[in-house]
Amino acid sequence: MAGQTAEYDYEAGSYDESRFGNKIGRHLDYMHRKIVQDLNISGKLILDAGTGTGRFAIWLAKKGFEVIGVDLSPKMLKVAKKKMKALNVNASLILADLRFLPFKPGVFNGCVCINVIDHLSDISKFLKDVNRVLKSDGCFIFNFSNILSPYLSIALIVNFREKALFKGGIRSKWFTFKKIRILLREAGFELRGIRGCMIASPLPLGDRFIKIVQPINLLAESSRLKFFSSSIFIKARPVLTMH
Ligand SMILES: C[S@@+](CC[C@H](N)C(=O)[O-])C[C@H]1O[C@@H](n2cnc3c(N)ncnc32)[C@H](O)[C@@H]1O
Image (cartoon, rainbow, N blue to C red; front, side, top):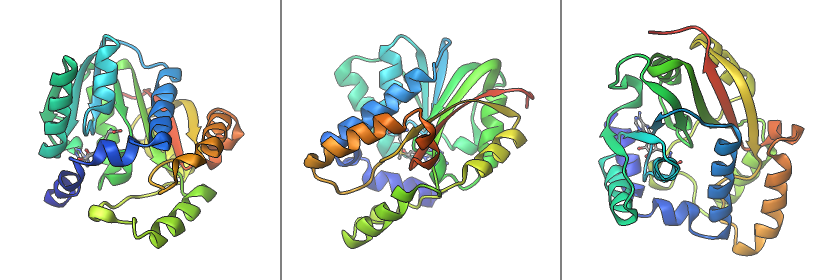
């Protein structure tokens, strides 16, 4: 657990700029929000699981949701708090481990968890806990890195050559769609929506590549190409309660 905190503490100060600061990063940020919006996040109280620097917590709070952001990294939360103050946005931030969510059963209308599950050591435990804290008509939107994406092998090579891989010691897991379906079923969820983001960070691509990245991502989002996307977004609903 301490190791995971350190990984993101290390990156906290540069996270927003390094991942979403250039043209491609801004496009990815836009795509992530577009997809979450299309998958129709609804209700009053939303849990932003692994909120980091508050990218989704801030956006959702601005849209009028009541948001609670949870993260294990004090430094990521410090950046989130600073951004919220500067933007005059209100959301609660809690320092906690996602595998032991400090909430009563059935309190949230929704949970978003973006760019997080690849880093969790016990996804099964986390999914069951999300089910526990969601209301029976709640929704859960998250994404995962797709091992079947051809893009991921290219990204691996490019990042390796650029020595960008494993910078800061951050480890990532990649999944098959089938594995995610099994994990969801075991945690009492049914699948309600799928979207794809073909090209995802991190890739040290210059701004000029935006002309290629943008149309590919828009095309892959909801076509069959989504199954080959580097990042697959899922909407799920609880069918068996874990309360
Ligand atoms: C790549 S960042 C994503 C942040 C944010 N969701 C976003 O999309 O910008 C991953 C975040 O997950 C957090 N995290 C990783 N493992 C965690 C755990 N077990 N419990 C709570 N947070 C965790 C990290 O501290 C980090 O802030």
